[in-house]
View 1 (cartoon, rainbow over the protein chains, first blue to last red):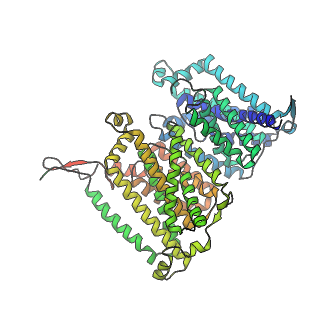
View 2: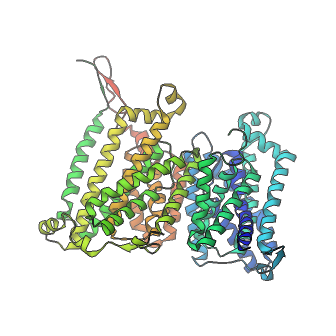
View 3: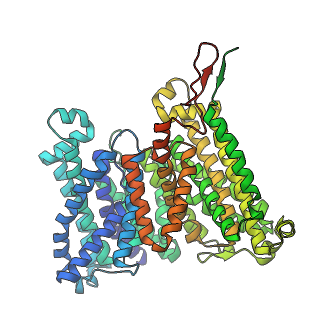
Length: 287
Length: 353
């Protein structure tokens, strides 16, 4: 029975990783940009929510609602004024600029909030749990997983049902032809990064409520997100959820065997998938 | 006069003479320099080696690795393992560091090369993390908390007695001088070796792949093989540097030896600020980096913030770095690799090119 519990916890943890990964996947899918500062942006979002909670006395969910448009604007401006300049054939500029941004963000947060670990308080919700058949499940992990599913459904709806989604797909397929049809790729990219940052805010909320965070943990979140994306197969959001679940389960199973193996087990699962299915479990056509 | 193909320019001839003079001066430096200066020079030289190899990877091979700390750390741990477990002298153990990094490079490349373009970068980072976490389980060299080189090993190191007698210094200072000389030799061999590589047929292929991979393939360059060569060579050199750095420190821990900031972020900033894709760039970059660090190191996180901002600014507005700006204006090339035809009827381009 302990194994069932371990696996259920792992699946739910996978929801958190899928949330980390969805923003990364969205941006890569549309503009082939790998944002090395993605993890640090999640941590920045967590600090923003923390400030709103402590300064204005808002509940964490309301604070995230307030933070989301701010994060959208930050993402929009970042893409419009900085990252759009780096896009092109050469992969060096976007990688090096976002890597620089990652270092800058970590140190801005360190200067502003010190290295002490913080946590967003969610009151009684933090410890609440439900009995689901044979296992007890925390309400918070359950909400995380449900949010991940909702985010993926919403992103798919945006992609396939709306005008901006059509613009995303068109620009992703061929930016030059799309611009002939009256789409401005620069703007489309800025909107996409803005939406990705809204997803980042949701990820940040659960990151901050479920565990302690400090300015240095961004890169590790980037790595989990990246592993989920690669395991799932580039361009598939449901695949990303599956990837997150695989890493989550590997980590909880690893931790059950030896607590020191938790992180390592997640990485090893990623390498095994990379070995057996280099293009991921659910690859989308050819990219 | 017959036609001949040459890469030499007047500037490069002058540069060669200056380089020989600088190296000669650096060799005799321990005779008059303070211990602090020797340590600073050691730091500059080892960072220069790391920067040259990262530049070879990213600037020439198009392989943007964010996981070079894997080779620094693994090399350093191999040195500690060889000294502590096998009783090897630390000096030859530096070579073991390079070999260990080379061995690690095979599985690393095998996995990372499955990831295209930008994802390669994070892939190398994952493997560096896996290596760090695995090494932290290695109890014989201190596990997660790390360990020190045994006193018996550091006291009786090769050459230390001779250096003590030569300069009349204490053991610890003699160890620093030894490490410094080894770093100098490694830096000269690295720059000389990379320059030699770029001037061979392989180097021509590498430059072709860098400039246009499709065109290079169409004239028969095996781009995949070039990637392997560059990756393995860089891993070996990075491992040697890692071994040397920790031979001098004589104390190691997984978090320090596999630090992404110390062994990859700094190195990337050095190369980007100096000028990526040139041999001159990292040399200029490491000097700028050292000056910035001496002036700003007391400001801690502000320093890193500024370094990051400078890196971003350079990448956005002067992607070829400081050396790119200089050579654009002056046409100067200290390590020219372009072949030019010289003979009757052709005009020697003395500005280089």
